[in-house]
Structures are given as C-alpha cells and as structure tokens.
Length: 286
Length: 340
Image 1 (tube, helix red, strand yellow):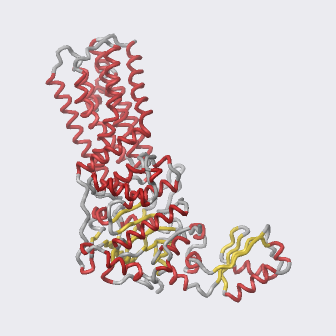
Image 2: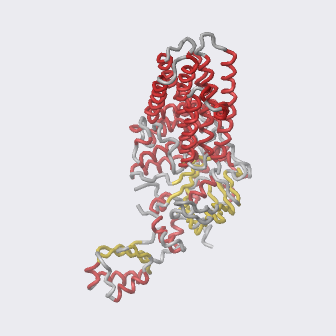
Image 3: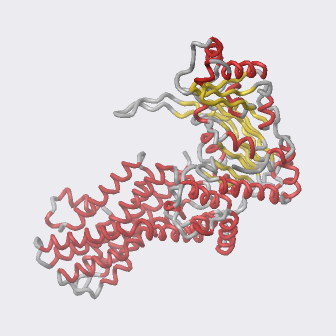
C-alpha cells in the first residue's frame, strides 16, 4: 500500500511543519500572535442557489425520470376515471385543474419531503453544512429544481385533460404562473416536512399524506364535500393553484380572482420556504 | 503522563481542543429497539494540532473519533469545552468552520446521483469559488487523482473505493488551511490510496495545509501520520508520533500462532502460552512477549508434538495495535483496529 514514508520526515511535528511554515501565505499566520486567521469567502446566495439547482436538475436524469412518468400517468389515469363520473361544466374544470396540480404535489411535496428526509437521516446534510453556503440557497435550489421537474408532467396533464373534457385551452398559459407558485409553496412544505420529521419514515409518510390530501381535496369537486372537509381544503396550499387553473378554463376568466388565488400561493410559498430554511438550519447543526 | 508526550508547540497551533465533553442522552426503549444508556462519546478531550502536520485519530469503532471530528467541524455542539481553529472559537461560532476547513464525512448521499465532475464542481462553487475557478479546480483535482475516466459517471454507479476517491476530490477543491478527513481511503485500492496521500502531501508542502485524519487502519496510521492520538471510550489514552508510541512497547515482540485444528493443550508449554496469550480468536493466538520469552515460545511450538498441530506462526515487532492493547484499550478493540 501507500504512501508518504514516515521515515522521510524527521520525527514529531517539526519535519512536517518546517517547509509548511515557509510556504504558508502570510495571511494565514493564524493565531501565532493571537490574531485569528482570515475566513475564506462565503458562497453568495444567487451563485450557490444556481449551483444547487443545476446539481439537483442533473439528478433527475439519473433517478427521477421514471417517477415523473408515474406522476403524469397517475394524473391522466385519474382524469380518465373521473370522466365517467362528471359530465363537463364546473366539475370537469376542477378535475382537470386538480389532476394537473396533483403532479406538482407528487413531485414537489412528496418526493422533496422524501429526499430531504433521506438526506437528513443518512448524514448527507453534513456535506452542505460544512460548506459556507447560505441555508436558503440549498433549500431554494432544491425546491426550484423539484418545481421544475413538475413542468412537463403538469403541462401534459393539463393539455390531455382539456382535450378529454373539451375545455378551452386558450388560457393554459396561466400554467406559467401556477406551476412556479404552487410548486414553490408545495416544495417549501415538502422540504420543511422532510427536514423536521424526526425519522426518515415519518418524512416519507408526511409526504405521502400531503399528496393524498392534494389528490382528494383537489381533484374531487368541492361542492360534493362535507363542510368540515371543505375547510381542510381551504388550508391546503395546492387548492389555490387548482382554483386559479380551474378559473382560467372559463370563457371570460375572473382575472382578479385568479390573481388572488395565485397571491395566496405566493404568500404560502414565502412562508413555507422560510420555514424550510429554518428547519434546514436546525437539522444541520445538532 | 504518556498523553501529550509530544505536544504541538505554542504559536504554531492550528487546532486546539480543551476539555471537550459530549454525552449522547439515553434513549428509551421502543418496540423492537432496546433502550440504550447515555454514552459519553467525548470525555474530556485535550488536543493540539500543529500547522502542516498530518494528525491522526486512531481507535476502534465507537471510540468517539467521528463524534470528536463532528465537534471540530461545527456539526455537533459540545456539552463542555472549547474548540479553537486558527484562532476562531468554533463552539461559539460553528458557522465559521466551513470557511476555515474542508470536511470529508463518511456519507456521500448528497453527491451520489451527481457525476464525479459535477459533484466536484458544485462543491467548489458552494465553497465560494466563482464559476471559472470552480471549473479549473475541478479539472485539476480530477487530473491529480486520476479520475478522468470516471468524470462523466454518477457516483452511485461507481465502486465503493472509486466513490470515496470522488468524495476526496470534492473535499480537496477550494483551498482550505485545514483538511478534516474521516476515513478517506476506505475501500480504495493501493493506487488510489497513493494518489490521495500524494495529493494531501502536495498541499502540505506547497501551502502548509494541516490534516486531521480519522482512521482505524493501523498500517496507514504508521506510515502517513506525523502524530497520532489514540482514542478509547471518548478519551485520548495516548498522543505521540507513531514511532514514539511504538517505543512504549519496543521491548516486546508480537508472536502470532495459528493452529490447524484444536490447539494441543496437552503439551505443557502450549498450555502455559495459552494463559499468557493476549488475544485468543478461534485458532489464532496473539502474544506479546519479551524477546527471550518469544524465542522460548517459538522453540516450544516448533519442536515436538505441538509442531504437527501448528498451521502458521509469525514473529513481528509491535505495531500501533499492540500499543493500543498495551495502553489498556478494550481487548475486543482488535476487531476495530484493522490491519490491511
């Protein structure tokens, strides 16, 4: 095997440190005279966020593509099933909108909760925690990447659903706002759940439950629910993404209401991402 | 006191640890998981690491090496004691650790699904380098560790040793005056090990980088370390150069006997040897004896009826493992101190 022969160095520390002293940059003189050594530069928020985002996006190529297919097929399958139950109108809109946003919930909430749960349980967070990177860059970068993963599935589901239920596709461009805003809200929630859950299995469970809630409360038409359940529906951030998308299927959408729904998504996104950042800090130093 | 026989000298200290205590609380038993008592993983640790030295933490599994390292890197808050790295108090400001040192942990989950090149580049970016510098460092370290052929492959598709090497690459990008490496060469072949130690040595010679190394590989400890602290149950039971530590048992010889089947205990000399054996593990006996005793023992087992039952024997000068045992380390510690 190795290596640096111990005999090559005089015994003790002097051998190792003698050339070192000569080579050490003056600025690193450290505490020789009680002066702390200068700290290396911190990674700035935006470049660090971009680096995390890019790395996370590349993971999709390796590990996530099958899951994205599952998310899309699941939503398309639900719409096909619901076709026998609802017959157009208001209900069809909420089915299509709910199924589309379900893709976002599956990926951004469920998968991100699992990812952070796993990272925390295995000690993988140590890697980030020992790099001078702002916690928000790690959380936002991962959340942005997971929200991006949802784009193809959500778009495909919305288009297929509109075709299935003969809904107008003219305002589907609203997805450009719905995906990032509900994606950010749900990814923030997923990240916070994954980082706060005391055990990995609980993180997975929370992610699954969140997704199930988004499925049941988002896809099923609200009018048919008991009153108590509809309150729960109002608490779920994905609901507002669903409503905004559903409204855009009207011939003359109520843009003010759409904006209000998206505004709720945005507020929830800010709050949940802040919570996730706090949870990350808490999980990183134990 | 044998501890600190060779302490680092005053003004040139990179890392100072004083009175470090960390206790993991007792866990209540649940279904399927028995209750565990509180564990004092660091039990009053004092250390000084000098600039430019390769300082090792040696000990069996569960001795508290990783717990100590996690406190030095700001990942774990000690219950008591101080940690100063390059003049900064890391107990009070754990977030500064990331700007002073580079840490290679035991887990690679955060990088597993990235390619070697992207894992290295991303780590460099997150260590504060701009895009161009990160790419340049990525290329340099991949070349240095001879990872070129693997650069485009995701870590999780690599063998254990290759993955570890990729993690070392990530730990080496972005200059830091202190490298904290937790078992960096686990699973590596000799070529990769040599590349790692050459890379570490280059940084030390050119930039005065200090290395704090966790290992339980005795051979590695003897060859790469300038000084070594031997840990047992959260305490530093010795701290010196490998040669200095071995001098403590220099008047002894290690004899290992391996029997074909059952040891011939009916032979009088063999029965006596069994009573003095330091460790008996199945058919393998390990003895530490004075040189003349060793000669007598070898004469006993190589002559007469005992020789027929003997499969193999070795006679060797003591290693750090013998030091560990002589210092009162747990006998089962031999399981943890691996000889490769």
